[in-house]
Image (cartoon, rainbow, N blue to C red; front, side, top):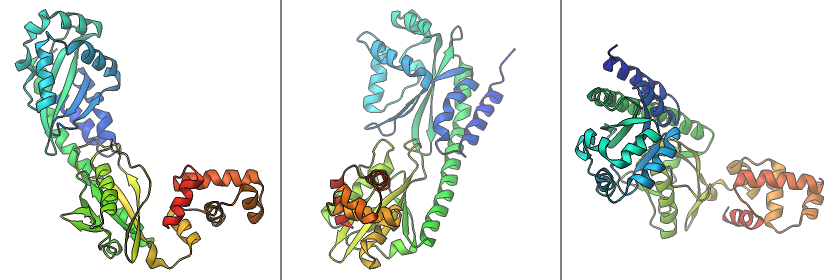
Length: 361
């Protein structure tokens, strides 16, 4: 029975568009897309940014991929030499230009590699996802070498993948706008960075905080103060790549008459790099303007209870456990449990770190 390539690709496209409604759904759905197309996913590869390309290998193909890298990229393998050139220079050539199927079938490496993993062959398609160049590689089943039909199915799929990515971005942006507006109504300030590290939304109260310590130029976070600029660059890098982790969950940017607490409070860290849309939500708090005692800052910024905030202040003052227990009129065991909660909420791992945080506040 002849396979209906268009129907096959349409089913795969529906999977993609349904996945767009989930956070991180697009990244996880490509393996199911490969199965719908009659094969298994090998990898999804972003070759636009050749300095740090995004490479997603299907979970079931991790062992196959490492075997290919370990054994396939050897001196006498023409295909591998060309593949390595792609990684270095970003020039993508079609699969047939690398090595013909007949030539590959005679290659000793592939004669051993494909049967050992139950692979009939590989077929790859290059396509555009939201302005980024991607390659999707499919492993066909054993006994079913790649055909022109396999290539056609992938080519039909590409526009659907593009639509799904834009749909996911639109939905994510809508959720983020609601989130940021909720922060504003709660009496705090917020701004949002997208996948390029650009500011796409800033609430009115956050706009009032802009100045020497924190500015926006060409939709990018900037500061005229070198130390502040370094901290803001960390945040921008984290928005651009999910692999760039922030080393702390709060930053303090200062100028002569102002100290602004910048807290990344939500990150879409499971999204594929290069896809558009909101990535990082920041909450801003003007510490100098609030004229509130330290414990109020702690409760507001880190959601500490009154007793937890009081304990944090005592610890920052260097008080030993028994003194803290006496002041709060609880046992030392209770103090230890409260310390765990304070550490978790403030993301501090020692009394020294907690003291440094409170001095900043």
